[in-house]
Image (cartoon, rainbow, N blue to C red; front, side, top):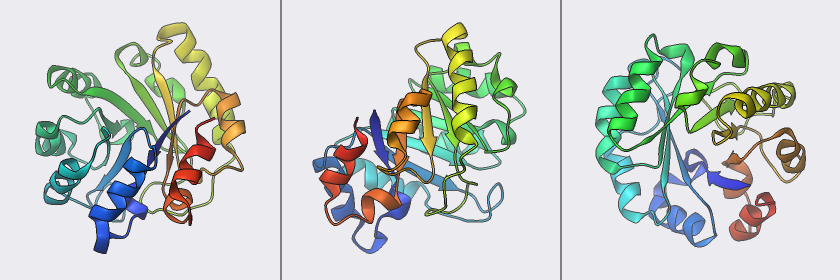
Length: 213
C-alpha cells in the first residue's frame, strides 16, 4: 500500500517542517488538495504555496484538483512536474481532452469520483488513466468520517479496472486509518490519502508505516 499524506492537515505555520516530517517518515507521495471555493465550499492553497512545497519535498507530488476550471489550474501547476494530477469527473465536460493534456505534459492523469458518483461513469476512460481516486468523504474539508459504502464501490471499480486496464491504481481519500486499512487493501485499494491520521499522530513515521501493509 502506498501512502500519500495530505498536507491539508499540516500546520501551515510550520509547513516546511511538516513536509520534511512526512518525507523523512517514509511516505510515498505528498497529497496536495487544491480547492477553488466554487466546486467545493472551501479554498486552500495556490501556486505560491505549492511551489514552496515542491522545493522542500523529496517525494513526488500528487495534486488533487477540486476546482471548476481544470485547464486553468493544470497550467498553474504543470511546471512542477507532479507525479499525478487528479481532477473530478463531476466538474469536467471534456475529460479525454484533460487526460491528453496531462499526458502531453508528462504528468500521470487521474480522475476523482465523489462518494455519490457511479464508477460506470468513467468505464470508457479507464484505459487512459494511471489512477482513479475515490472520495470516501465529501470533498472540501479534512477530518471527516469514512463513508462505508465506498468499500463496495471500490470492489466494483476494481473489477472494471481488471478488465480494461490492470495497471491503473485505485486511491482512497478520507477517513483512512489503521482501523480500516486492511479492509481497503482487501477491496483493491493501492494508494491511501491520510491527513488527520498521519499529522494527528505523535509518531508520524509509525503512523505512515502502519498503513504500508
